[in-house]
Image 1 (cartoon, one colour):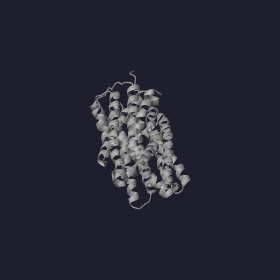
Image 2: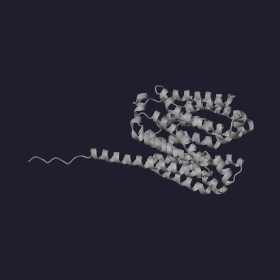
Image 3: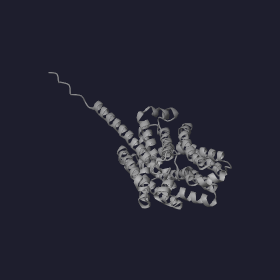
Length: 399
């Protein structure tokens, strides 16, 4: 794999760390800024919604720029956002810094996916995308737990100073290692917008929203699920998150390899497996060892969805994939927000901390239904194309 993919993975590592590390620092942030925990939790939701808005806007704004130039600009804005978080004296400024950083998230992963796919032969595109996203999975294994420990011992601001430094390293790597790439023939904002007239692009975005909504319906409440239901101590949550992160890394690689062979078949299997694991999690969350094992497999199937989902939308936006790819990152985060909200509703209504697993399973099943419908449309299109290409009967010879 080209070294440029490692540069993209470094940028993804920094972005993934800042997205999720706030989850482990909510008590410290709430205490220091004198806000209730639910208000501190809005820093998670605010970031996700910032990605939803920022992904298409930032990608559209940079449609006329070379992709490498846009990636370096995005990393610069990311650094500025996290620097504002580190310096923020108030909750409002911390939220502003989170929103600034979030604006770069979707565009970086969207444009980066296109760049990564163009660096390798066609039969390795999904694996290349998976390698870029491995930065996001390693962020969950190392960045988030280490950032949580750093913030707990030296104050939550120290975590954002560290993430700012990660951004500087990512910017330097992208500038040094990512080669310039020519624009697609259908380049420009008009060509990028044109792909949204294709129904299959919207179906791919719906698959992403529902599938990853299923992941976050459960993951958002994994800490109270593990402490209040499974019986783990609060100190064990960080290690469970590491276990989950290891599962993400494994699933990311497996999902990339599966998508290289057959994108839609891999989506059918992975979305079905995700729904099944979440259903099983309802029961296994009641005892420590089964809960820990399920957390790992939840990470595997949860992130195995990412390479095929990202590859699918790029396939259906062929010719002008950058904006659609960024929109898919927005769809991931829209799924995060919807899943967390729906999972929270079940907890608020007294259904218990395992109820979000039911919600997640239903969302994953809905994503599978959309995938099956999209695959049906593919097969119908293939049959129509084959029919039009079949030669007609040979004309009778004149006598």
